[in-house]
Length: 299
Image 1 (tube, rainbow, N blue to C red):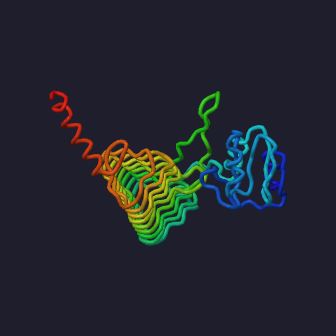
Image 2: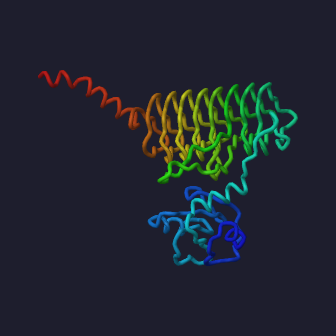
């Protein structure tokens, strides 16, 4: 903790002997993590979270066993630490010499593979795909042509000077037997991981936002888009052009029909349709009633 205080120029309060094991935004924190808040109404949420240490811009009472770092600009302090431990390293070769690629993996021409990437047994990466820094691909993963795995998170802090980008410090993890369709894009987490669960299949031109977790054996059809930090449990099916907002939770086995828009959490084991998406049977009754409305008005 004292080293972190020195690097950020912050005053250290509370447990000065903590050993930190990670750095995370408030939505993803675990024990051992450092997080931050620069808005007083969220201080309590940060202090009561699983995080072991919090960067704040005001002195507060420190919960037992935790630490608080006090500085003028917590966001800048937080971001500077991420940049220190995830520094910008441009690629100077098509495949980084730090990448670890299993000898049975097939890598077609034009594939670009970043720093510290792991590609497992039997993977097949088709032509002109991009696998960004720190991505992890399990066994027998297929990434089709032109897909982008591990692009930076679309995540900004609004200030009076404009939008400041967070340094992307997370990863993308594709578990065993995952398939990613041509032209799809998967963003890294801001500080945690974006995860596509074992056996899940993504069609072409699917967009997965930062920190999304897709469960096991999910099916996502073409042009699906999922906002940051949303969680899909196992065996969810999303038909074509479904859009899901950020920070939502979709229950196990849910089926969402084509062109639906999801703006709230959905229970598992049901079929949904429409915008805002609701149970399909109820939505169809609504549509049937609307079709009859002109006749009722004439009467």
